[in-house]
Image (cartoon, rainbow over all chains, first blue to last red; front, side, top):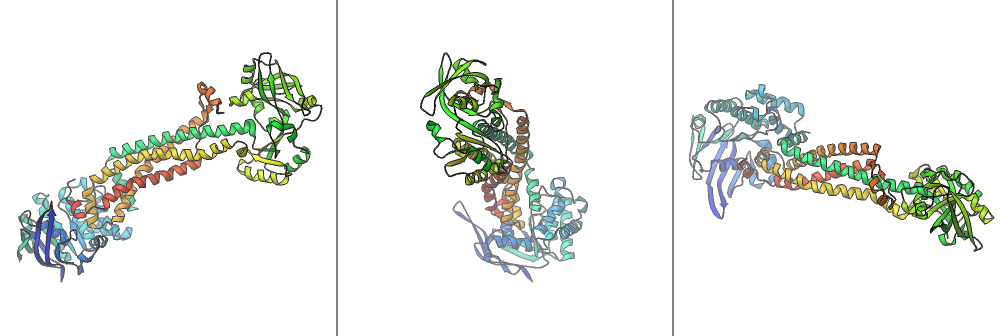
Length: 228
Length: 405
């Protein structure tokens, strides 16, 4: 079942009156449970594509259907709510809330979903266990290594039981070992819980682990292949 | 609760910046509160001293009472009136005044004065004139007079000096009478001291060869909050030709002072908060600009714009509240300290006494002022947060996330 469907999507940025076409006629379907890498050189449109799949950016033309909802018909406030319940985000720079502990960062999503205190505590703790950071639950982001922060970010992304997780260059700021650990974690979550991961990268270590590779160049999908 | 907790933690992300604005708020408000306390104390004592010195709480006169036709405007049937007003529970004490416009003369000078005939014992319980004696004694013997110390200086008279009081009698003849000065009073109002002399009513009766006319009845009440109610009660039971007035009608300038004190204080505190508002806006704006990327992430992961708005408002309210809390505490302590000791302004006493203001001030802040100030602090903090908060909620997450922190 397709949880992401892009039909004839174009994205043009009007920067300083010079239009830049970031995406050209993108047609893409991603099914539940996939472990997909969006790859391509810098400026190929990876981040733009991820932003559109995350409903963070609008398209110039075409249609975007996320988890069976046409997002182009939604207003900004509806989009925020949609993202809260349907999409998990992992950012390149982790982007945890610096004043909250690891546990509180994960709990925060559950708070936004109006889950009661006890339940969100238990669920957040369980997610930290899943990413192997239960013992760091009271640490603030500044007290965690980059790899640990990114694991907390994964736990946060999973907290809302999203239909899919979008990760924009998740290993870009990590050393080799931390990157490997993060990929192990994401892969295990994909296998064990059928969590859908879509990540942009140009890191060969990540590409190697992907089950499907979508290659972009100059805003066009030039290749879409399975990597099993 | 989580939003408050997050807002609270956020304000400590940049401790120095937050401490500076908290410090500014604390200093501004504590100084403002003390100034308000000083003004309130000054105005309150101005009114209290005036009531205690000359107006009492309530006065009764004839409706056509005019100072230039005093003999025609005396209050008749005093005993019956006293019997009636004594039945009103809020009345504490009363005294009678005979008021005669006259001339006080020494061998060197003459000045126009108001000669007030009193019953010394009654007067002691209603006005504070007996307590204002700074030299000599209160009216203790026949044919004695107490005059203001400043009047004595102008007439070059001392204790036990003779003073001649002259006035027009009921028959139109001028009456001259020599009195011996038994005491000099010194109130906080120069004009009062120069223009009033007090004699025993019995001495006036002797001079007039009849019972001295009573021109006004001064009444002191127990509960001053019920002054208007008591005034109306008295008016109801008195004959129509008598007019009952509280000090507010007798001294409308004091009434305006009393009524405008709180308003002036509120405006004053408002101006201080207005100045602090800009500091707060600046702090919050810097704080928002520092966190654009964070806000982008929060909006991306599902924080609604209304909650983001609320978070920034809470940050502003928390910052102001801490400063406000310490400002109020310090303002209260400083005011209480000087309230118990008084602020001695003797070097300015000449100037102050011309306005009836005592030279020792006791700052005082009304409880309502604290409540008003608290509401004003919250209001100011919300106003200050509006622009930064609107700036934050207008962010597009996709652009905000790309911002370099």
